[in-house]
Length: 112
Image (cartoon, rainbow, N blue to C red; front, side):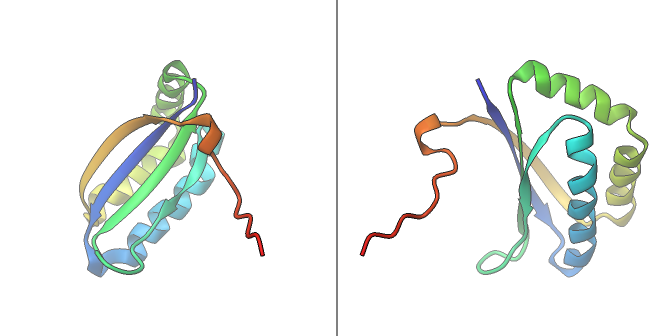
């Protein structure tokens, strides 16, 4: 059963550029550690202090293997330290979701 780790961040809106760099770094690191990165999403309209990251795994066991690899990864550690030093993440919540297969990645189909 595929699961998605849904990460909700409360960020400092005055440090959006630093959070963007943090997210871009994960774009390289997460796939190398075994996560299927669906993406990081930044504020655009509405709330200016909420961002999201979504990473999928084939199972919770695969997530645990990913976490173990991530803890040993030099670039992952460096990115965590960057966030702690710069303090642009104020709060972080993780939720694990399972997809309804018939709804996953449905492309737009406009009928005229």
